[in-house]
Length: 181
Image (cartoon, rainbow, N blue to C red):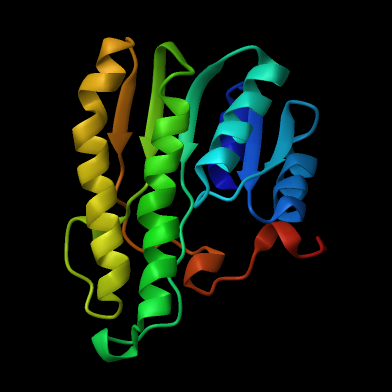
């Protein structure tokens, strides 16, 4: 939400893509006419391709992609991570990054940029949820491994690894969905 608003403040045409289409639409409502909402399931390559195509159809080009989807899940150490949670964490946090990168690469404009958010858990261990950390480590590796493919197109790909940020992922309220006072 904050990134989308900031991009719009810099006069970018913004497309908010989320599995939660109503959440994306709420952010678009805050931004106004310079934004659009698209539903995407990052764990699906076809859904990522459809997202990129929707942007191209509406805007004519894709200059910047901010791949920022994430899921933490309910975990409190290795013993609490079962195979289903592990699979979901990898599907969203690692496969989702792969799908997004793969869908964006052929469409990104010359001089364009892709930013992926693996989180600090992608560079250090995270004992509270080792599966989350493993998926984020993989996302860092994907970004590093895709630099040459983007450079060949005259574009950049980078990872940013912030520490904890107050978002719904970590239990913070979804400000976009709360009524204003």
